[in-house]
Image 1 (cartoon, rainbow, N blue to C red):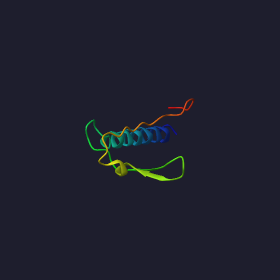
Image 2 (cartoon, rainbow, N blue to C red):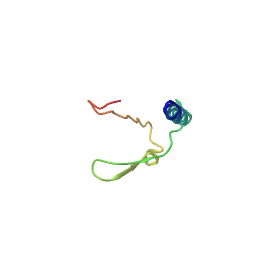
Image 3 (cartoon, rainbow, N blue to C red):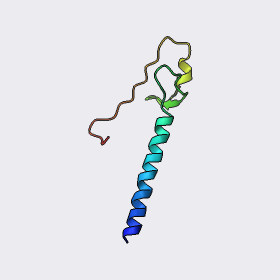
Image 4 (cartoon, helix red, strand yellow):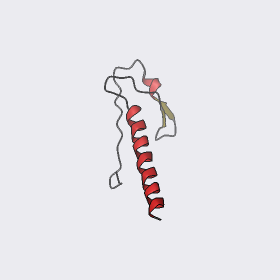
Length: 70
């Protein structure tokens, strides 16, 4: 029983470690070009980042809703 729990805990730990490494590897550094993505607007239209190409500046802000676990 102890070996099974130890195996599960080790698997969970290394899975979390691996997923953390992937997210760090895919992070965009300051000054790098952001990857193109598409979002649905509040009026049910589609907005793509590439649609703003050639404009002066684009600010991307992600807001975590109040009272949600982070």
